[in-house]
Structures are given as C-alpha cells and as structure tokens.
Image (tube, rainbow, N blue to C red; front, side):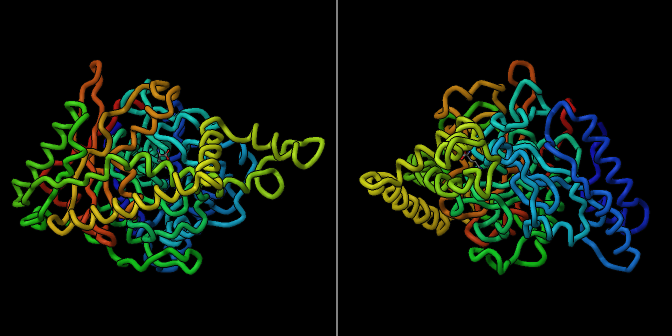
Length: 483
Ligand code: GLN
C-alpha cells in the first residue's frame, strides 16, 4: 500500500476540483473492504453518499471547507443521527441515534464525510478492543496482536489507510495507547476542550474526545475543527480557532521533563524510543531533565476507583425501559435483570458491581472519597512539575502490542496497560502519543509511542512538539504490512 494522502492534502485537492468527495468516499469504502479482516469498522454510514452530495453543493456555492470531502470514521460511542451507535455492546445493538454529537457535527460542518463507525471495547472499557460485541479489531502490524483500546477501530482505520483521520474517546488512555500500538498520532485534549455532547458517557469527569492522524498538520486541522465551547456541554471551554503546528526552531530552549516513575518496567524497544526522542529534542536545543511525580504509584488504583463508580451510575440507564435492548420477563424486575445480564458483557458487569460497591454506604469514604483526594494530589504534583518544565514525557505504553487473548483472563493485567496514561485524565491535562520507533518481537516489527503531557489548555504546545519532531525526521511514520 502506498502512503495514503493526508486529510489536508485531500481537502486541498477537493477544493481545487482535482478530486470529488464521491471519489474519495468510494476509495475509502474500497479500502475498508480490503481491510475488512482487521474488523476496524462496525458499520458504514448509510448517509455518506448524501453527505458527499451536500459537500459538492457547498463547494459549488463557494464555501471554504477545511475538510472538504475528507472521509473520516468516528468511534461507535459518538452519536451521528440516523446511524447505529452500539458502543460495542449487545445492549445497544439496535440503537439508532436521534441526534448528532457536537464533535461529529463540527466535522460535517467542515466538509468531512463520516463514512462509518469504528469498533471499540464495550462502552470504552478496555485496552485492547477485544470486548466488542462485534468481535475484536486486529493490529495491522501483526493480526495476532491487539491494536490497543478502547478506540482500537478508530486507530486501525487510520493506521491501515482507510481514512486519514478519525475520532476516538479517551477516558484513561483510549486514544493515546491504541495510537502508540498502531504507529500513529493520538491526542487527548485538555478536559473540556472538545464538547462531550453526544459522546455516550463512560466516566464523565474523565471522558474526552480526541483525534487520530498520521501527521501533525492533520492533528492541528482536526483540533481547529472540533475544539471549542458548546452551550450543550457545561464543562466545555474556549479554544483557539486555529491550532498551529511547530517547527524544529520552536524546540530551542524548551524544557522537557522525563517522569522518573515511568522509566522502570518498560521493554527495551520502548526505552530506546524514549531515549531517541529525547536525543532528537536535545539536538534541536531543547533542555531535558528528570522530574518525579511520586503519587503516580497510586494512579491506576485511583483511576479505577473513580471510573468504575461513574460508570456504574452512567450505565444505570440501560435497563430495557427507555435505553437498552429489552429482554422480556415476568415482571419489571425480572425484565430489567435479564436485560442487564444479557445485554452487558463480563467486563462491563464487573465494573458496574465494583463501582456500585465503592459508592455504597460504609465504603464510600474508604474508596471513592479517598480516590478523589488522591486525584487532587496527583493534579498538584503535575502542577509542581510544570513549574520546572514546559512539557513532560513518558512512554505511552510500557510495551508494544500484546497478543490477542494474552490479557483477557486477568483484568489487573489489562488495567496495567494504562499505567502511563490514566494520571493525565485524572488531572484533566492534554497529552499526545507520537510514533517514536519500532521494537522487534518474535521477528515482527511493532510500533512504540512516546507520550508528551502539557499543562491544561496548552494543547497547542503538543502540536509544536509534533511538528518540531517531524521536521527533525524523528517521527516513525510507516505503513503497516497487513491490511
Ligand atoms: N483502559 C482504560 C479503561 O478501561 C481506559 C479506557 C478509555 O480511555 N476509554 O478504563
């Protein structure tokens, strides 16, 4: 497969009349068919052709559209009116969205064509995209391995060249970790930067929609389109209307702090990629050092003691009455019980039970309330680290893609995959995974990523870094062998 064109290139070609939205859509659909064994998409959008017509009309009328005719996919927990939104769950197998999420609407307004919905772990709970009711998504670098998760379908759609960009959601790493494991960029914006209106809630205080892309310019383009305040999301924040990409010159004097706690327990290839990135930054005049965030040792426990209680209340609505595929019973209680028993998979059930337990009277103080206090401490330690450094860096994941099935039997082993990413969500910070190298495992080359973490609202600094590293030739962007 030749390296696919970027979203910015495609939009320019369409605006110039060299390509039509329809041809791009047809190409994306045929790529999706070729790549069907990877199971990245759960549905094609029945309205995509109409959207292409509409974009062609708007261009004829002289509108300037930054994503003119660009095919995109969005994770299957982002509502698009008239399409199925299953969240990878049997519970929502038949659910058709009556409205469109703000982030998806922004894409449409900018001229993008939403060609399909991407596979995901059920209700975004997982790190491998193995728990979907639609079956697992496979990694295009090695189909025996996972693509990461929970936004694995959105990552694979971009890595395998189906679409140049996509949207995922990141509650504890679900954009950054699959980006790292599939060799592309994944950005988790500052909490509030992108409206959550129309994103099916998992853990509302942590959830954030973010883009996947194959280059810095496309990431910036996506952020310019999707970020900004929304009267329908009370937590949304103002944002620049134009996100700028940096150059190597912008890296001079930048203070980059490596988080010491992230240095142990990584594979050799992950360590080497991190060191290679630091060397590239130094060669451009950045100053690197180490910084400690001791509370990170509690990040996973804290994250799960907050995410699961929030999930248990958010998922209470799926009882087969208004929401959820109803399973009939002799009475209301039995119908609700059967609906939840059959509609939810095991991991979702486990989290609802643990979350409910942690919120229950007598345990609330010991678990949930304590986790909230540690969350505050973690945020304070990040603030302190940002007094000495402009940006922090860690591996995105301690290891490259693991084998299908390798971590499914042991939930704690799966949760450990998020050790480098969850603290960022607890603190509400923006973070970006950059493709930083490869590691050969059993003779197969697998991508590894490096994570940059910026202070709240400094999302643009991450694009400065991405552009700077690209300019230095320090970003490992390659086309995977499997499609
Ligand atoms: N793997 C983490 C979890 O299972 C993060 C998921 C996410 O970011 N949606 O909760």
